Image (tube, rainbow, N blue to C red; front, side, top):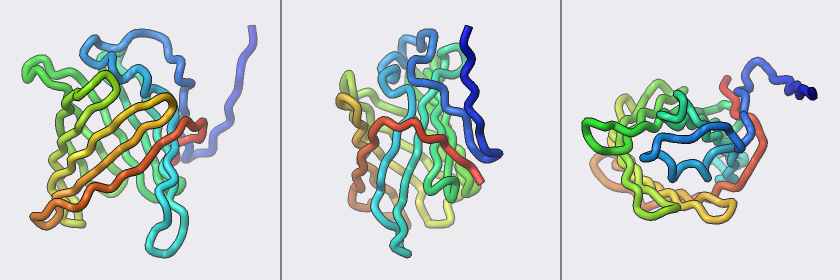
Length: 173
């Protein structure tokens, strides 16, 4: 029997491989191809430094939820979500908690076999954001995410980014 040891720094978060065992709840099955690690090169921040978002999707709670973790620039910002089927509301719902001390809650609408739209209510954002709408589309080995924010009462123009497969670790500071 062979064992693999992956040494993590104190702030790294373990990333299981994308071939996780077990099924997902039937209402979450469309997320199976999303499982594993992803990376987006998001351009540069206001100081001209590269912005890299590392994201991991995992099967959680015996397949009754999908857990996502992400961190930007080795933990400068990050968050964690649990996505689950809410039987009472007949919807896919989620909670997203951040290292910036705010959180969101929302629901998702599956729009095709490989795409969904998420609608979020934001609580505690210091930037004046109260709602978020994002559409994610999976193709081959790429996720395209288009996001708009309701900020100070007005919707922003959608921002788009692409994620490709990655084996990098999510980090929190």
